[in-house]
Image (cartoon, rainbow, N blue to C red; front, side):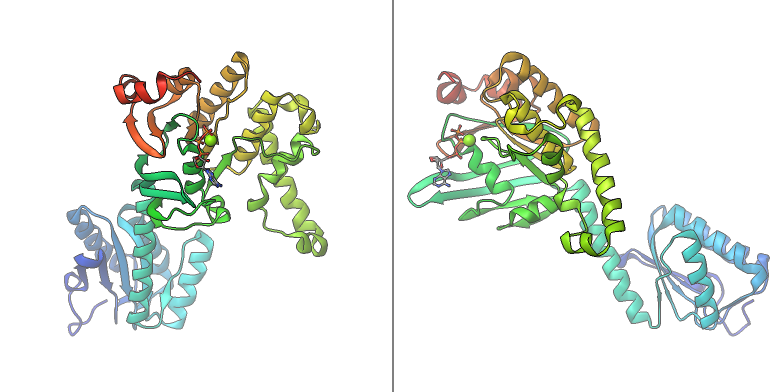
Amino acid sequence: MATMSTPSFAERISFHDSIETMEVDFSSLTFADLAAVNTFFDLVDERLAQSGKSWYFLVIYSDCVISPEAWDRFAERGKMANLKHGLGTVRVGASSQTRDTIRQRAELEAFRANIYDTRDQAMLALGEMRKRRRDFKSSAEGTFLRVENVSLRFGGVKAITGVSFEIKRGEISSIIGPNGAGKSSMLNVINGVYHPQEGVVTYLGNARRQMRTHEAATQGIARTFQNIALFKGMSVLDNLMTGRNLKMKSNFLMQALYWGPAQREELEHRKKVEEVIDFLEIEHIRKTPVGRLPYGLQKRVELGRALAAEPILLLLDEPMAGMNVEEKQDMCRFILDVNDQFGTTILLIEHDMGVVMDISDFVVVLDHGMKIAEGTPDEVRSDPTVIRAYLGTAH
Ligand SMILES: Nc1ncnc2c1ncn2[C@@H]1O[C@H](COP(=O)(O)OP(=O)(O)OP(=O)(O)O)[C@@H](O)[C@H]1O
Ligand SMILES: [Mg+2]
């Protein structure tokens, strides 16, 4: 227990508002029994409840002794405080014995021990934690996809001129517009194939002027192409497996050296691919070379390859072009189901107005590389500029 010369329990709890941190000072305390632990943690809980917020915990252990009888309760109360009010914990100054006990418990209960020698190191680690959390929050809650003032030129050709729009997470959005309007170019900007001369694309809270295609893919962007891009001589199954490439940890060398883990990994990927096959109802053609399939099914396989990558954002460039009515209906259903069942955000280009109006939450209209309208399908449909530029012409 605290001796007369040490601060009272109340003085040992302080809040650093600017860094969202509650500091708990256990220095030179001895927790000899359950009662001592309870007294302190009752106070901690009370102060936390009063604050009505969550905090990072900075815990000072210098010369603190926790007797073996008290450890379980100490850990349990700490854990409860954490569950209710904790954003993360860093620990400083623990004796080697306390350190070992914390590490053991951390391992058993799968939490991070985060023990540091100095207060400075702990504060640094805390700063990192806060930054990670901020990034995560901005990616989870902030901008999903924002295109700002993007211009793209090919020599003298202005493919896109000063286009801005925003896509919301979880929605199905469409880009429409006449031939040559810059629709495919826009998808290529979003997934990093083209680098615009001007403008910024912000994806998951990160603004970037340039991005490489593999970066887009590792960040969960998958796409299908206006002209089917599959390996025609390969089976449906093998084509879908190529969609898993980025997820595969083991490369060819590893596969040669460590056959076991690589094989296990392959099995996992196959399982994922089988799920996609199931979902798209293409079991009957899984072994068929893609080149032998009718066009509509090839389009579905291409969707499958994109889905195999488990995308967060799925870009579809004219997924229904060249399909008959029935094939279009099937594709519409799959797109809606992907959105619904996996929560995948979808941005598609489509010429069939009926389809666009049926499945989109939001529509962006491009014409000659410029945005001429945006809004809900109804808003866009009744916009005179759109009618003049696009809907009036036959497609
Ligand atoms: N790689 C390129 N090199 C040169 N010009 C290009 C390139 N890609 C697109 N363009 C030009 O940019 C403009 C927009 O093309 P884009 O393919 O983006 O249009 P789109 O709206 O997808 O048309 P469509 O409906 O025909 O698919 C066109 O004038 C096109 O010729
Ligand atoms: Mg196009």
